[in-house]
Image 1 (cartoon, rainbow, N blue to C red):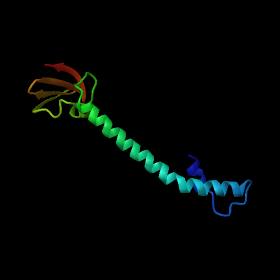
Image 2: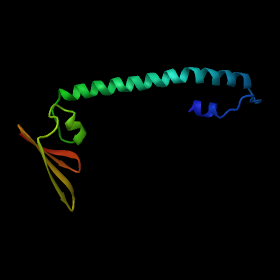
Image 3: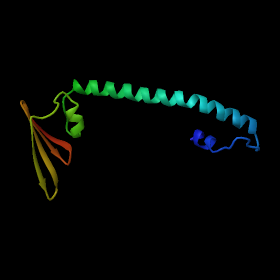
Image 4: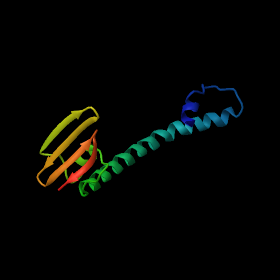
Amino acid sequence: MAKYYLDNIEPGYPGLFADDIMQFKQRINTEYPAYEAKQKADKIAKDAQEKARAKTEGVRIGMTQEQVRNSNWGNPRKINKTTGRYGVYEQWVYNGGYLYFEDGILTTIQN
């Protein structure tokens, strides 16, 4: 937020604490890109760790379809889809069982 406001201060700002503000603006503009890059790298690393962890875990009620695909269940062999008045229902068929979704959320596990 500070960067947003500092970016809107014009060079040659004549107001109170002008020298301090301009020095701070210069410091932020120098350090912020490195901070932003570190934040992105940390998020990428965390997402990779989460995905690796998810591959070792099974499924549980309440998971999204993406979370199930990222789990050790992976992609189904077949998907049976039913669209009704109250939503979309899917049955995912696996070699070892079935998963049932209502509007994209896992509601039933049948082994």
